Length: 173
Image (cartoon, rainbow, N blue to C red):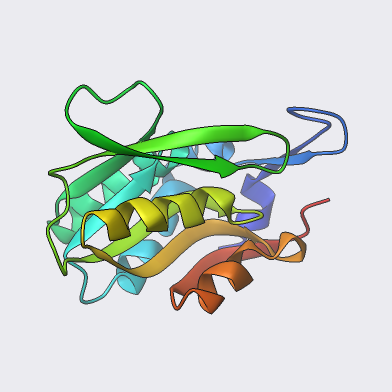
């Protein structure tokens, strides 16, 4: 399947100079969505849990966890988790944000696959890796639908000894 025809590109969103790659068009097509979930599920081998980054990573990650009969761990934006949590501030392409994870969501030495819609500069993925490490988990794999290769986020993860995979490689600008 050619996923490129199911990805909408929106120039100057959320601010001027950013080319936003929208995967909600994949979610809105049953065949494209099923294709993505099946492909990502096939990549996630020898994993204890699937973690997903808010918000689109929840959609993909929860579906993959369900298909593989694995637990799902939400990594959320600041202030959204009700229980004891760790927080990690990080830099995006265009601002700063904070992610949080429940302290009891991952056990020591559990092998985690982190799922999101795309990887750009790697700030969100690296912040998630730090949160997983704080809990004693091991981020083995980062999987996304899109890798914005020229923004080099997947290279940061590889340097941090995390395997990466994506279904589509696109320019970020």
